[in-house]
Length: 99
Image (cartoon, rainbow, N blue to C red; front, side, top):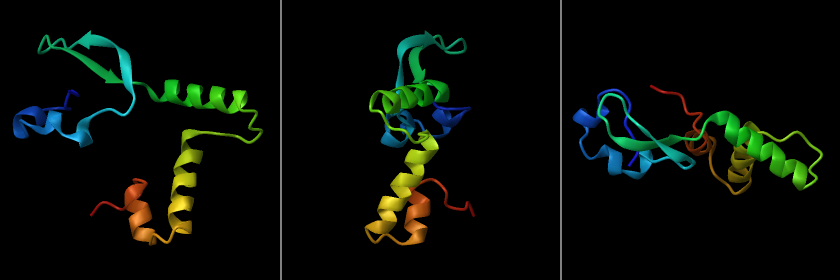
């Protein structure tokens, strides 16, 4: 189960079991939360994912610049090419305006 930020664990007691709070790329090692003493995993840092992506692109002999942001835009482009409306694309890619 993923640790929840701030006091969300008290506000939403079952939230840590919901998919939306889980890490897609969890760290290999566990750490101990100094406040609760609970052993848990954290997410991989952005730098690790970026480094791994660049290494994979190099090994695949992709000559273009590749980044996580590139993947995000590719995802959005494929959604649009498959007929999704712009509002849905923005929401799915995390770029929807918060109201």
